[in-house]
Amino acid sequence: MIEWMYILILTLMAGLAIPLGGLLATVDTVRPNWLNEELRHSVTAFGGGALLSAVALVLVPEGIEPFSNLAAVSLFLLGGCLFMWIDIALYKLHTSAGQLVAMLSDFIPESIALGASIALGKGSSLLIASLIMMQNLPEGFNAFRELKESSHYSTRKIIVLFTVLALLGPVAGLSAYYWLSNFDALISGIMLVAAGGILYAVFQDIAPQVKLDFHWAPPLGAVLGFVLGLAGFMMSH
Image (cartoon, rainbow, N blue to C red; front, side):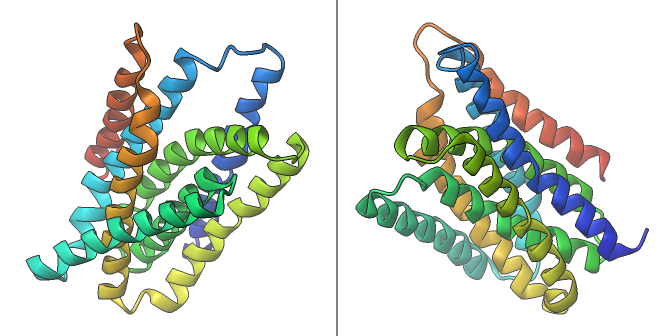
């Protein structure tokens, strides 16, 4: 298959997990409140586990290759600080799109990493696409609920918005393939910044939502999310 078509297919499939997650969240309108407890917490935890696997197995290992220890640590820390700044700005603006912005903040850099990995001939592209998909599903789920509960947008408008945003993945991936693939250090830097930001987001936004008194399945969801990423990593090496 032609490489640009492969990137288009992988990034589009990963991106469409966003509106799919939103559609899953609408089930609550059919059976009220059934997503308010254990299942919702488990889905959130699964997304957190998938994000951690992306950081530990893909973004950091590939991101640190061209850098010294000090440079790699600095870029990772920069990512955490950048996401913290975004978090603070969203809080001050009282926006209802915090989860949506957080989702795009890791979706776009990872799509860039996917396009670059194919251009550079690395074998991790399918793993990256799978991890993005696993992340986008629960993040789309949570972003839909956040927008629905705190804005006047209809279900249809939110799903259409999510579908349009899913197209940012192919745009980012193809841009990296055609224009950024010759800049290995830049791509690696983006990976490290994204990794630091994702780690911040996991402990700021995702982990606090997981705990549910007298239920033990949600934390196991995080383990399952990481295990799925680990399995993909091992199959690609």
